[in-house]
Length: 144
Image (cartoon, rainbow, N blue to C red):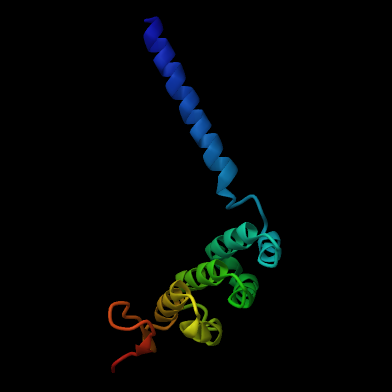
């Protein structure tokens, strides 16, 4: 009986620790949108990546987040440009404002950035852009 109690207590402790870790490192609700937008300009790459990945989840605040994300497409770090393009693509057909900023990334020196930009464009405006990763690294005009 004592062994069962030890096993149950151990499982409880491990589960509680897992929940605590997930809560601590999730970061999703620990910072405001304003703080995350400021993080896009941080000198720390990690802060910029986290902000670029979390801001697109705040679709209700797109009027605030989209201009900041568009600006982040100019970041010197390829991981930031890539994460930002992916995030803008997840916003889907709304809004169309990122299109002019994403198009130059189709010629980025980093292939991952080019791919992310192509996918994002095809998600934002699938009627205008299609992305075919096996045949081309740039979106092409959709056939009518």
